[in-house]
Amino acid sequence: WTKGPTYETAAEIRMMGTLGADAVGMSTAPEIMVAHQSGMSVLGISCITNMATGISDSKLSHAEVTETANRVKNDFTTLVREIIFSMS
View 1 (cartoon, rainbow, N blue to C red):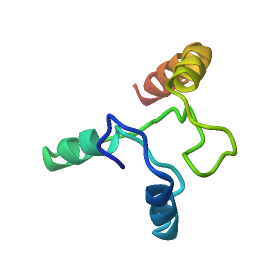
View 2 (view 1 turned 180 degrees about the horizontal axis):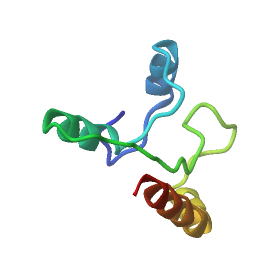
View 3 (view 1 turned 180 degrees about the vertical axis):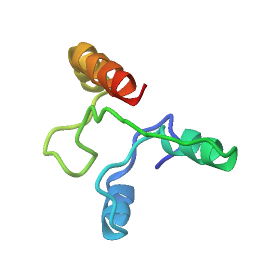
View 4 (view 1 turned 30 degrees about the horizontal axis):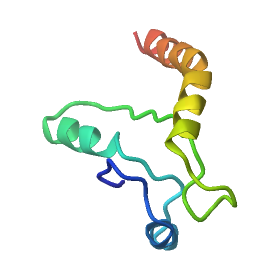
């Protein structure tokens, strides 16, 4: 987890990979920590929108991240709805 609002550096990604991270993001972790501390049951779901800096040969751009998020938003929304429905 990184604080954002900037993307991770290649060095941060290498460090997190060394520590065993499979994915890195700017959200989900803080919300889950607060919910857990409040005694709530939590399910975390994240939508990964880009390859991290240093992983892909192409330069990371915010436009690419936004484009990917927009492209998958309907499928992701359907997934979340189905999960919530199955829990109720």
